[in-house]
Structures are given as structure tokens and as C-alpha cells.
Length: 463
Image 1 (cartoon, rainbow, N blue to C red):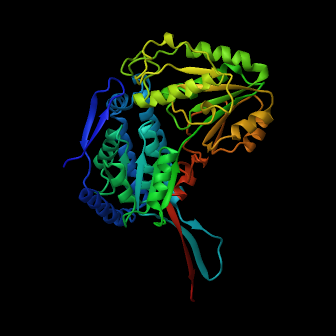
Image 2: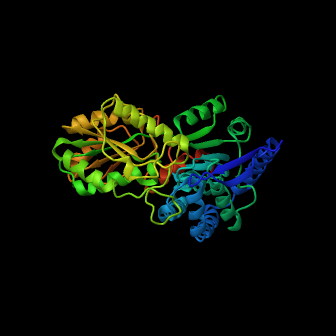
Image 3: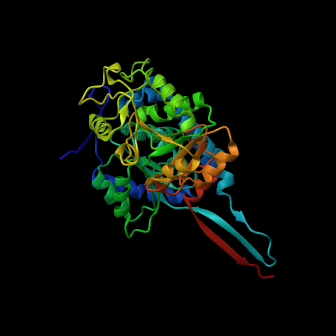
């Protein structure tokens, strides 16, 4: 019996993409081809790998308008913002290509008479990259392009919500001249993905998704001794100090909370504001959010699209209802956003005050257009609350005192700390999480260390 994948567009619930799922034989054939292709690919000089990657990046960028439209329909990104993801892909991929030769070069040791010693970074082998729907190109590029440049072969499994993203990425590299089998996509269900992870020949798994999904990955990898990297959930905080530029903090933090309808692993989900600027911050935040336009993402005037599916909207509505029942206050009138209806994927943005860490809205990942704002009286209180979380992907500080911000940043348990910005990945910096937000690292020169293994060469020279 043929098994099929269906992508229902959050715009109108229609079937936007339909694909047959790979059979067990097709999956095994793809793995066998990847293993064989990788043996040859690893011998290709890094400079040649980089040249192919640059051609692929250019070909990908040339399809920006088409790719942006597909993104809008598959996962609901407003069309006015969708092309930004294509540009972000190009930025990250280009940077990793720029630093590939230097990052992958042999590590030379000080001269020792009579010996030749160095450390070589060898590719791991075949990498399985499992990418999510919320930023389908920006999450995939973090692992795919560096893995290829490091000499690995890649099998890409994308979310059933965004299957075209995998196809488009592979097509660009195929057209750029990448040898057959080095980069392939597979449309698979969860069971077949777990079977592939347990198959001999696979060397590495890069997973981006939920904590529950990460737990499933670890169970599937048990006993396999695979290299792996995981980017999981987040409940990222922001702290607005008394000396912050309030207008800038409002504009930046609200964008970090509501961009992509709040569906970002590193989006701002909880904000702590010092007493001295609390009232001004909340007043300006409400005024700004009331200007958002909730609508169909294919409408160029829309600034806030639907969440990915009605079930996600129902989960967020339930979080908000629980908080209100516990004494929180909702500051946005949902009737100002008429598309917000029970059972719909269209959800009004919401700001909650009177919140605390006894409420799910401040501790449980929301992944939607809602943010809680809590009053604090000191840096110490803010630090304690920011660290009171199972997650640690990013944290943002808003302050005009760089040294004070640095002291706070040193105390925060997170992978990245921002000052006066948020929700952005600089490809020159290591992208990593702590606690339940994941392990491993992508991007930057450090990211290459997680896609290669060190091999030491210790030669004694006989005269």
C-alpha cells in the first residue's frame, strides 16, 4: 500500500504538497549510495567543495521569489517577510564556505626535532539532518552546508509541513555539480526515521525539534555511539534594565516575541522589566502590538500570519486561559483581530501581565504569539528568574551599560546572550544550547569541530 505525505497549508487548510513516503528499500538504497559517495567526496579538496557550494548558493538565491511563495503557503510566513529566510540561508551558507579551508586545515604543532606531528580533522561519514518547519531553510542550512563542506555525505529529512524545502536544497546542489549521492533528501515517517538511525552506515544525526522529539532521537541512537547534535526547545527570556532605551527595547523585544507568529526556538517568550521602566515599557508594547495586522500570509499587508495548525493555536489559547484563571491580565483585546476564532489557526497576539513562574505561560514553551511580562526590582531578581527554566538557548538584556550587561550575561545559563537585540543568529558565533535546549554546536569555526573527528599523526623520522 502506498503511504503518502500531505502538507495542509495553514492559510486555508488546503492540500499544498503531496508526496509518496520512501519505502524501506528506497531508504536503504539512499544510505548505501551515501556511504559510497562519501568515500569519494572526502578525498575532494576543500577548495573544490567550497566552489561547488558557492555555485549551489547562487542557484538557490536566484529562486528567492519562488521559494518565498512556497514558504508562505507551507508554513504561513507572511509573504512580506518570507524572502528574508532565503537571504538568511545565503548569509549563513556563504560564511561557512568563507571559513571552511581555514577551519578544516590541519592543526600544526610546534616543531619537535626528529618528528612530524599534526592533527587532521576527518569527516564523520554520513550525516542525517532532521529539520523542522518553523524556519525550514535557516535550521537546515546550519547543519547541511557545513557537513558537506567538511567532507560528509548528507541525508536530509524535512518536516512533513515543509517537504519542498528539502527538495529545493538538493536540487540546487545537484545543479551546481555535487557528485551523485553526496546530498539526498528522504520523505519518511517517524518509524522509518528511527529505523534509519539504527542502521549501520550512518555516522551522525543533527536534529532540530521539540524536547520530546529529542528524547525519541536519543532512544533511537541508544547503543549506536553516533555523533549527534540537537537543538531543542526554548523559553527564551529578555531583561529590560532601568537604564535601557525603552523605545528600542519595546521595538526589539516585541519583534523577537511575535515574528513568525512567535514560532521560533529562540524567540522571546518571557520578559522581565525593572520597576523604574515597567509602566512605560508595557504601555509602549501594547501600543505597538495593537498595530499588527493578522491575516492571510499571502496578503502583502499582513504582518502576523496564522500559527502552523489549529491544534497549535488551541494549545496556546489553553495556556493563556490557564494564566488568566490564575490571576494574569490580558492587555490585548482579541476582538481587534477578527480572524481570531476558536478552532482556527489564526490567533491574535497577546501580552499578559500579572504573571509568575507558577503559570505555564512563564515556564512551558508556547511557540506562538503570546508573551508574559513580569516586574522585577533588581538585576539579581532578573537573573534568578531568567535561570529558573529547563531551557537555555538564548537570553536578551536591554541596557546602556555594557559592563553591567556583561556581568549579568556571565550569570545567565544559556547558549547565547544578546545585548540590545534578540532572535538572530550571527554565523560567526557558535550556535548552541544548554539544559533541555540541546547539545552540540553549529555555525562558526567551532561548528566544524562537531562535524569532524580529530585524527593525530605522530611520525618519527629515521635519518
